Image: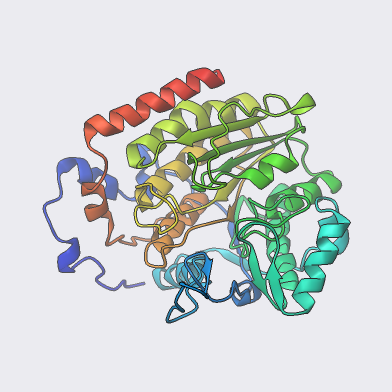
Length: 405
C-alpha cells in the first residue's frame, strides 16, 4: 500500500545526526536479527470508543475556574485509540492481522476480581447518569457495559494465545484497567482488565504462571494490589516516580506473604527517554523475564511515557516502544514459546500515541509496514543530554542493585 508523504514539514526538518539516524532502522531489522512473522490478532470493539469521561480540561471537571474545552476536553478520550486504529488501517498493518471482537466479561468473571459491593454501585451509577467512583475515575451512562466489553477484549486476547489460536495478540481496551482496585475505580480505570483476563485463564486451566510488564508512565497500582500476595503472578511496573498515584514510587514494595518477591517497581526520575528506558529493560526487565519463566507475558501497554504526553514528563519515542517490544519478544521466544499479549492502557497525545502503538503492534506481529514516524528525528534531537542520560542510567543501576538485579 502506498503511504502518504508524512515527513516533509518544516517543523520536522533539520540535520539528523548519525546517532539519530540509527533509530529509523526498520523494526524487523532489530540490530541485524530479523524477526519472524507471527500469527497475531487485534481485538477491538467499536463500543469501547463510545465510553465517555464527561466534560473536563485534562482531568479537571468543568466548573468553577475550569472553562469548557472545545471538544469535551478530558485527557482520556477515544481519539488517541481511534487514530491508532486508523493509522494501522492506512499503513496496511491492520489487514495483516486477525481482527476480532469479544463477548463482554460476565458478572461471574468480574466477581472473581471485584467485590460485589463495588460492582453493584458501579452498575447503579452507570444505569443512571454516570458519576465518579474513586479518585479521578469519571464515567457516563452505560459505561458499565462498555467496561465489561473492554475486559472481554482483554480476556479473549489472552485466552486466544494460550489456546494456540494466535502467537500474539493486542487488545485495544478502553476504559483502561491497571489502576482499578478490587473495590474501587481509580485513574480512569473502571474494571481491572488484566486481572480479569488472568483469572479467566486460570479458571480454564490454560496457564499457571504469569508475568505482567507495565510500562505505562503511571504506577500499575491496581494490578499490584490485586496480586500482591500471589506468588504466581509477577508484576513489573516501570513508571515515573511520584506521578500517579501522586507521591508513590514503590521501590521497596516487593509483595507480601506468599507473594513476597513477585512484585517489582522501578520508579524512574522525570525526564527519562530512549536510553534510560532501554537500559531499564536490559537491567531489570529482561533478567526478570528469564528468572520468572512465565507461561505467558502480558504487556500493560501504556504509551504515556511518550515525549509529548500531557499527563507525564518522560521522553520516549515510537522507537523506544518498538525496541522494548522487540526485547520482550526475543526473551519470550526463549522462555514461553513467544506467547505475548498486550493490553492498551494510557497514552493521551492524540497526535503521537498512534505512532507509538503502531510500533508495538508491529513488534508483536513481526511485521514491517514501512510506516514513517514524522516526529521521530526531532524528538530524538530533544532527548536528554549524554551526561543526563548517564545519570538516569546510574539511578536505574542503583535501584536494580537494591532490587537484587
